[in-house]
Image 1 (tube, helix red, strand yellow):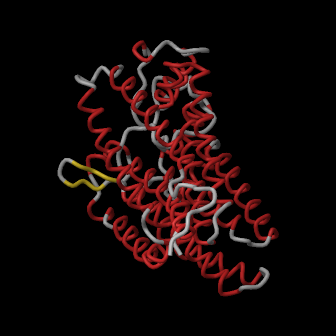
Image 2: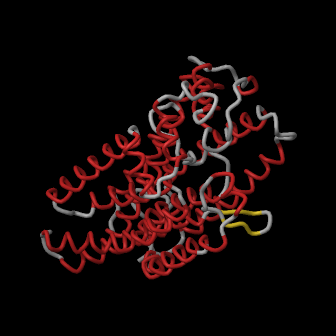
Image 3: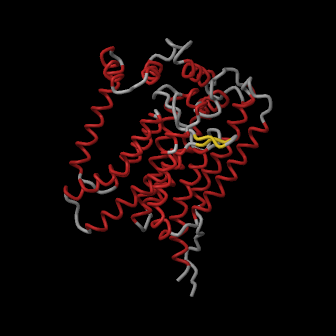
Length: 393
């Protein structure tokens, strides 16, 4: 028997889809500006056509994910995590040597004319696996949290994190490693762990982070970090971050040009077809500089507000989640998006070191772009399954 909801709510969360589609539109506009200002690009439209194909594939993946019932998602989580980990492990033998030589990282697998990053799918598998572990552990205890149970939970979460961090260390992809760390920390906070553990843990991480920066800035510290397999390009990123214009002709060329481009946009920008400052990799890691130069301070503020609205809608979904598993998944997806947004924009405006993190739905399409859609699909799935269950009895 079927009954209609009194509020007649739709099973699709359009409030969440609105900022997503607006960001896709902004992404196409920014891509057009980046490509038409690039002297190495002969024709803009083939590249925009490729972006359109990625967008169509992403939207289809988003809605396909939305329709996955929670019981299937629960059962498939360990499988998806294992497959993602296996895919990342293939990089040890089959990473793209051309991209490795160009970027210094071993994070791409090439299949003919196509290349993809297994770590992007691993982020989603990791979120699902952590949500699975937290839900299972909390269901097993069914009592108020005690330190012994919290340590067991943290141990289980760390156990599935260590293989990923080891593979990220092999890939030399420090930026993506930080995404996994942010997801882990966010999900630990909402897992119900004791505040005593959280306080000690975050204090320890703060000390390690500050100490790491101080070590980079001293000669003896760099020797110690080199002994721990840190590479010169990683030290250069810190120096380029702290003194972008001092090394504008060498290690901080990209940052310095990006800051110049954003600054030249002033209040309202110079227009999309009047971009004059050359910025390397503008269609991907430095896409925010296109908005800054073309639409100025006002344009960048509007984009940031749009991202805030996206995160706000995700938070609303999390707060209304009726199942713990979904609540933890949405928390992981929020941390994933939040880190990408803060790191990309922060590095473009000089607040954070440049780590090669793309801006969700704005940067050029690819594996990361597809993962953005699937992440949104996981949140839509929570809303769709809840409404579907209320409609059908």
